[in-house]
Image 1 (cartoon, rainbow, N blue to C red):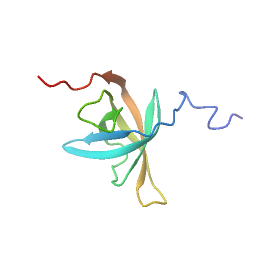
Image 2 (tube, rainbow, N blue to C red):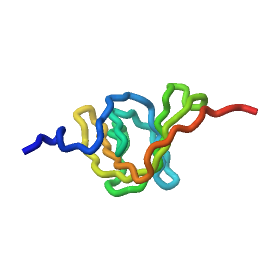
Image 3 (cartoon, rainbow, N blue to C red):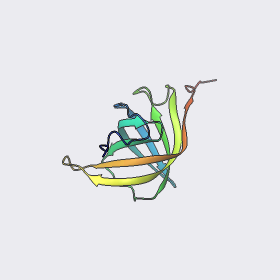
Length: 106
């Protein structure tokens, strides 16, 4: 019987980057724990309901206003409390991540 790690569809990459989650009119800041072609695991101080549709922006730099980003849409698959008092949030991608160019000022 394969282990859970062997049965994953996509390779997960441990990346700790700032993420903006938009659910309806609410925007939440989070930090990525790992990312794959099919989804992302985040840590956040705020809880989002399981099943909620979300828009994601993974920022490549700490300066969110100036850097390129990954954007995608997904659905909250799992929310678990962490020992630090926050939440681990697993999101499955409905629309795969795409790279967007840095913001430019005119």
